[in-house]
Amino acid sequence: MAKLVTTENRTADLRTSWEDLKKTKPTLRIRDCAEELGVSEGELLATTVGKYTTKLEGDWTKLLSRFPELGRVMSLSRNDSCVLEHKGPFQKIDIIQGGPHTMATVIGPIETRVFFNAWKYGFAVQQPTPHGLQQSIQIFDEAGVAVTKIFLIQPGAADNKPGSNQEAFDKIVSDFTAKEQKKEIEILAVKIAPTKPIDDVDKESLLNDWQNMKDTHDFFGMLRKHRVNRKDAVELSEGKFSYRLDKSSLRSMLEKAALEHLPIMVFAGNRGNLQIHQGKIQTVRVMDQWLNILDPDFNMHLKTDHIESVWVVKKPTADGIVTGIEVFDDKKEMIVQFFGLRKPGIPELEKWRELVAEIAKS
Image: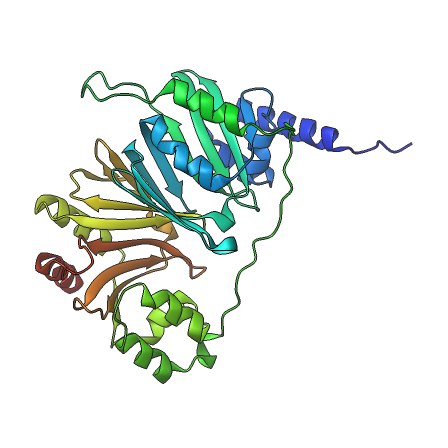
């Protein structure tokens, strides 16, 4: 008689496979373990519910609004090729209601743009490690891909900075604990709005709309209007609003920005959480295929072997041209963007334009 395969069986089998994998590769992170096992990270984490993980549920806008109570934390957002990590408190959070398109802006030491339509599953993780108890709130999309992770941090002995608020974390977990603590999640394919093949895009009309932009945010509406992939739009504008850079220019740009104390902006994340760095950077290091910024309260880890192309992209605005560096992978997905630090109503820094022009020549 064939063995009846139940959800419990699948969960137990997956958990066993994970434990076996960790025995052979003990340093492998959960994201990489999930990839090797052919499942999502969210599915793998769900198998630990009841052990050191608690499933969360509720209004995610209200959950985000509680994050300032946690005090100083580490916020992590990533895609397949770039990770941004910031230490600090959540401060100013504005929820912008829009039904399925509800979003939020987070301003302060931790700055993000949040898109709640991709916030599907939440977990509180309290995992014992060789370095002590690691505690976090982790959000995943419908495909089980991590959207953002918020880690509690201990007080800093060297810098005398405060740690996270344990009582606030415990109360938030209690308030958002799901009624059913299931060890599995339902995985759904992410629906992506279709775009035209690059040869079907009306290039002249696209570039005319590009020329008439008044704000950098007009760019997203322009892409939707023309149903064009972002990478394709950048390619179509080559010679007018964009040009290519060598991949090695990213390291040069970061090293020069650090040397000249030039404040920059770094944007990276995913469809549910775009994390932003604003300010000067200090320490740039290359380790194997990773280009890193390793500062006390900000880290960036960029996997350079995933980079297919790097572009300088210029956008007209009411404040003048805004110059960005956009990095894409071989699937035409945006990995990370860099800008000179600027605020609305203020032209971009001339030193940033000079730096970009300088690395383009090298």
